[in-house]
Each structure stands twice: as structure tokens, then as C-alpha cells.
Image (tube, rainbow, N blue to C red; front, side):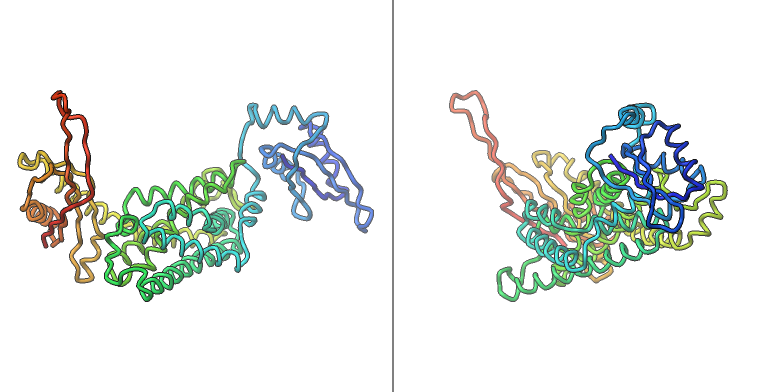
Length: 449
């Protein structure tokens, strides 16, 4: 529910009151005795869903709402016709969750934090994320997402683009770029302190840590999370839905990737993969937010549907930023498409080999694929295949067979690692057959380069 306070001049007062009477909106008029001009303050309560419609009707009637208009939150209203407005806009034929453009601008800016709070929380979330990645703890990584403040900057940018508010665009883009840089630097410093103090072995290959390996090979699933996060944030901002929980989802697409870049420790596959994932996800969040707001018919104040190209030329800053983001997304998206194709070939090759009769007792558990771009850094991409085997069974040629099949499909050298988990089946003492299955941790590793 909202309370609208509108300052109008005497020559506009009649049009405003007539419109409010026509829409059965109860109001109070207060004369402005302190002003030398003949003005009055008109106050009226509205359901949140009715604000955009009523303000639009007022503008169409020639009322200037730019001089003094306040849209305030209110708890409840007891007026003669308010229930009719609720029946009409909340649960009736004009039901709509959308809020006025002025309100989404205010809601987005309300999520902006001062520099001390924003960068402090970003640094803390990056350190917690780095610790969670190194501990291979999903719970700790989720904790980092909860305290990350990135939702505000992302939505400020999206709202700025769709409303052509240059101040919001500059604010959102600046804070995002500097925030990601701060997160990476914090992770670097934290990781260096851990290695220098031998809290973490300097010889640790971070690409083998489960939580980190998930951030070094960007794929369709990872980008889908970012798109959905940005879209959900925009829907929450533009409707009566809460945005706070969406912030965790947006942070999930950004902060762990930034932390992974910081603790790459000279491993190109980690650095490049996590950085590509961070950039692609950040762009996806911003573009998804912009697309959803545009779909919900949010436009700059002077936008006209009669001449789209003329309107676009009038809002060159917004159009330029959208184009730059699309170009960057296309560039990094090309790397993503190559990686998806690489992943598909690897998965197909592994499936082809394991479908052979000699491997019928093996059960595929996981295929880990390193970023294919590391080949440009003089390294061969690593493919880790985890399988479950009967206890005591030996497959000494599996890594070689997989390597040959993958190199035939991909056309470049790869390193294949095969991790085995032994499977034992207990027997029923009554002689009725097996009654239990246990699978242990990886107990053997074979590799072929």
C-alpha cells in the first residue's frame, strides 16, 4: 500500500480532483499557505498495484508531477472507497503486481550501500568464499553468498539502463567492477597468507578441489544460474515480491567465481576458467535484469512507441551500454560455446568407451572437464573420470583407451585421469542373496597423457 502526496498548482487542481473522483479514490487537500504561488498538497492512499496506473492517468490529463511527488509506504487505510480499489487492482480485472517506475528507481537506490559498508562486506564475503572453496564446503560457500552485497549494484545498473538514468548506470557499473576487483584482491591476499603460513600446502593443486573445479569450466548450467538470478531480481524489484532472497542467488553466480580467480595460485586453468565464468555471469545478470524490466514495459520517461529508432537515438548512453554488454557477452559467450562443445565431446567419448562390454561392470559417477583454453598456455586440458568398480577388479588400460578416444574426437592432446571407487556387496547370511552395497572413497588413480 502506498500514500501519494502530490503538489499541484491551482490551474491543475480541478483536473486532479476530477480524475480522483472518477476513479473513486479518496483524497485530502491541504492548502500551501507558505508559498507565494497558489498551490495545494493532495494526499490519497492507493494499493501498490494501482500507483503506476493512477500516475499515468494524471500525466495524461496534463498534470505535472515532477515538482513535488512523494510515494510513501503505508500500513493500512480506512477510507470510504479503498476496499473498492483493492477489489479492482489487487484481486480484480486490473490485477497487476507491477510498481511505478519512480518506485523501482527508489527501491534500487535503497539497496545501494556506502563505500565502507559495500567494500567491507565484499571483502568479507570473498574471504569466506575462498575459505569455503579451499575447505570444499558448500555450506561455507553459501554463507559467503548470504553476506555478499552485489544484488544492489546489479539491479541499479539494470534499472539505470532501462530508464536511461546515467547516474544510476555509472554508479552500478563502477561499484560492480571495483567490487569484483576487491573480491579478487581479498582472495589473493587470503590465499597468500594461508600458503605462506603453511596452513595450506604450497603444493596443493587447487583444480582438484571439488568446489573449485566447479568454477573453472563455465558451461550452460552456470550461465543459466546467472540469467535466472538477474531475471528474478528484476521481477522482485518491479513487483511487490521481496528482493532480499534473490540477492543470495545473484551472489551465487558471482562471488565464488571471483574468489576462485584469487586463489588460482598460478594454475592457468583455474585463473582463466574462473575469470571467464565471472565475466559471463556478471554480464548475464545485468542483461537479464534489463530484459525483464523492458519486457514489463518500463521505459525512459520520454519514450514514445511511435518512433522506436528516434527514441533509441535520444538515449544513446543506455543503448551504447547495452550494445557493449552484448558484444562482451558474445565474445566471452563464444568461449563458452567452445567449452560446451568441448564438454559434449568429452562426455560422448567417455560414454562411448564405457559402453564397451569389457567395462560393463563399471559405473560412471562423474566426469570433470578442465577449461579447454588452457591449451593456449602450453598445457593439455585435464579430464577426470570417476568410476565405481567391483572390489579387486583391475582396468589398467582404461585411461589409455579414454585418452585415445577423446583425442580422436577433440583433435588435440588431453590428460586423462581415472579415479576408482571400490564396490563391495555384502551377502545375506541366510543365503537369500545380497542385502547391502557400500561404495568407498577413491582408492586408486590412473592417468594417461
